[in-house]
Amino acid sequence: MKRLLMVAALVAAGSLVAMQGAAADDAAMIKSAESAAPPAVSSGAAIHAMDEKGAMRTLREGTNGFWCMPDNPATPGPDPMCGDANAMERAMAWIGKKEPPKGKVGFMHMLAGGTDGSNTDPYATKPEEGNNWVETGTARDDRQRNGHDAGLSG
Image 1 (tube, rainbow, N blue to C red):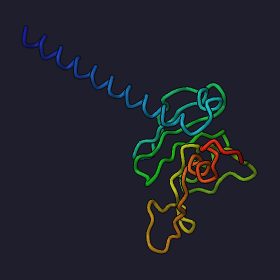
Image 2: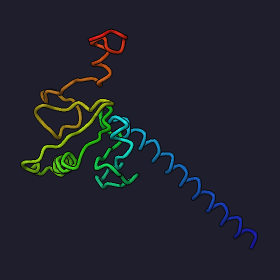
Image 3: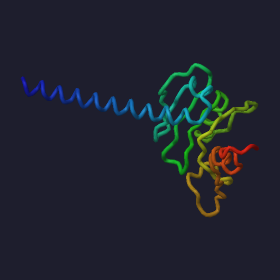
Image 4: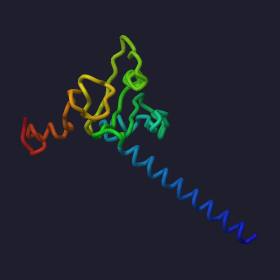
């Protein structure tokens, strides 16, 4: 009986550690997602994460009509993003390789940067010979190039 209780305690402790690890991972994903937009947008946004099979999971419910997603570690660069409902429709159409909704303009923030992509293949996952890969930096890189982060006016 003592042994059974010990095994049950170890299983329970392992489950608690796993749940705490998942909560820490969720907290890190929420922080990543929130980095994509100004706090006025991201603090009230729903936070969604996509697994490697494309299934969405809600990490936090939203209150302001915006949504955010954390960086995708499988892509070549940082790409957390936040957007409105129309932007989500367009993103889901792109992910599903479907025609985007007509007559709807979506607004999206990607202040932490964005994974560069191909100008010739919207589904390319990495730079390859002939796919005309775009190479950009973050908004911070742009400000630094223009002297804005150095205390200069402009």
